[in-house]
Length: 456
Image (cartoon, one colour):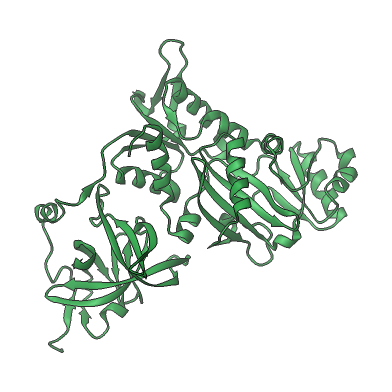
């Protein structure tokens, strides 16, 4: 065995002195080509006429209150395929790795690893020619104690302590919900997951209350983040109204969520505010089918269930006969439907703008799978970074204000007559847009709450 190689176990502690990380636990993985470092709030900038990138990191696993602000030379941007098969564009930095008594420069990609078990992944490119791995061992070079970790990070910034925030949702394991909980804790807030189905309320003029399983009274909350699934809109909005009656700040109001879920009313509201949409028809009688099809320019056309979500209940009818069959089938079930012109030139692509507090904080292009016209990520669509135009930003912001939402996912399609608005989502998912853009969208949502309370 060569004497000049470092022997590592499957997990080791290392440091990055140049970027101010005194120690961090790494997963040593020779199966991974590239090394990766956990990073949030990633932002490129120019320093001495060179490309640099700044980012934040919580270097200690399961400790979201210790924050290190880092800067490093930016050497590349690459498309990386994660272990789950998701492709994302990442910034690449180069800095010195110190492990044991050895130091050498390595390249690392920056990515949000909150859902991973380790803040650092050491890949084979960084180890090549220098390291031997014994996968049955751990911490061959030692590991810090809890006290020594505290000493090493005593001068690091602490996320400011602050608010008591409830996340009103259904599934605590959903990526978006996990990220919002983590983002709030990272910024020093007391976060509570509140399962909608386990809440119930007391309606009383003098002492209104919301109770949780076991009779616990939900009081002293500063803010609520409603993340209400379409299937429980009625009850979720009733709970949100009750929190509003208790003078609790809700990131999206019950009124705004309710009107955003009514597709027909929301489109009428958007048109009244001067937001352009694809030509759309609505009817409630099979006798009107022929004229309804003509109204939107004839086939091909889109038929939508009013209650549909995530691309479900949306059908492309390519001929008049197919359109008549679909419309009459939906109506025979007493389902409310919209008929909408098909924007062929969009080629199965749309744009999702994520709007928070009147600002487009991120945007992606969603592209449908081959043979599919719906670009929803949940249906296998892919996400990529896109630069939206000033007009598209204006439409997204105007639509969000028209719906009276603080947080919204606004879907826009590019047509021959300019950008058109498809839909405004009051509980947009975070996974696709955070993965594609590397932006801390969940953190931006928490900042919007802090702004309401004038916290910095």
